[in-house]
Length: 131
Image (cartoon, rainbow, N blue to C red):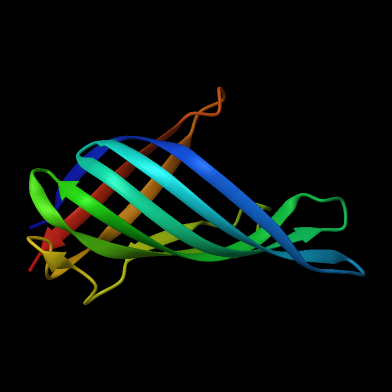
């Protein structure tokens, strides 16, 4: 049986680095840190690889994100895998990586959704199972 939880998060740092600017696209790496509020209470560190199209608009990214803190009162950590195949209507997929849960979160699986508001704020929904 899965459980849903949600809340908000703040980007506390965003450190981009251009790796390759070639014809048609720019490849980059970004290190991001976040602070979570709500069902998740804690911090995360994101390592992201991205590509921007010739106009500089985000085209696709992959990332790994380690969350550390509490999930609905349970202490531990887990890793999220992000996969965004494109910015032209393709679906962003974020899931808990099986086997990465620690502490009270050992055995966690689930799916994570990011909601970005027009004002730039971020919220999330995590649907998870503890096994």
